[in-house]
Image (tube, rainbow, N blue to C red; front, side, top):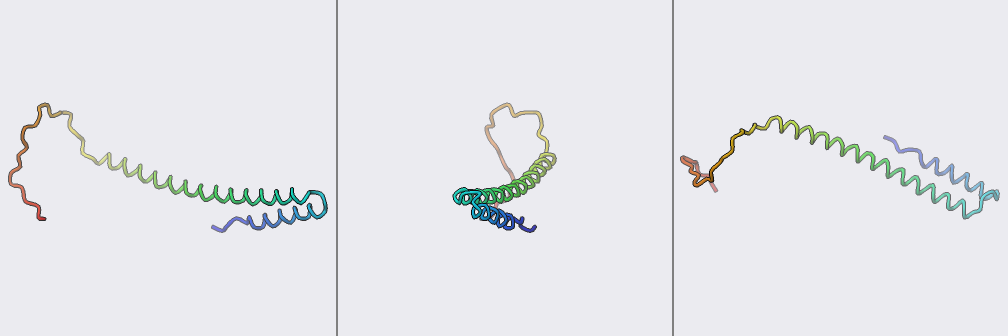
Amino acid sequence: MPDPPWGVFLVATCGALAWLAVSGRVELAVAATAVIAVQTTLAALSRVGINGAAVFHTSLYLSDMQTFLDDAAARAPQRGTRAHAAPTEEIRLEEVLPVPG
């Protein structure tokens, strides 16, 4: 995606402000302040675009994650309704293969 032509707009704005300052229609300090305001605005717009793209990519990730969690919940075995009532005294394993290591 090509960059927006903000450089062209900035040059046009600076040219117009320079003409206004040279012709005496606007004081030099006001023109300089306007140039700084335009540059600050362009930087803020650039950050909005970058952050908007980041939010979009994050939403894609979250959508995929939610789909995965829904699918995992649907595939999980269902638990029974009975509960173990008494405390367990002993758990006994017979014919268990040892794990090496």
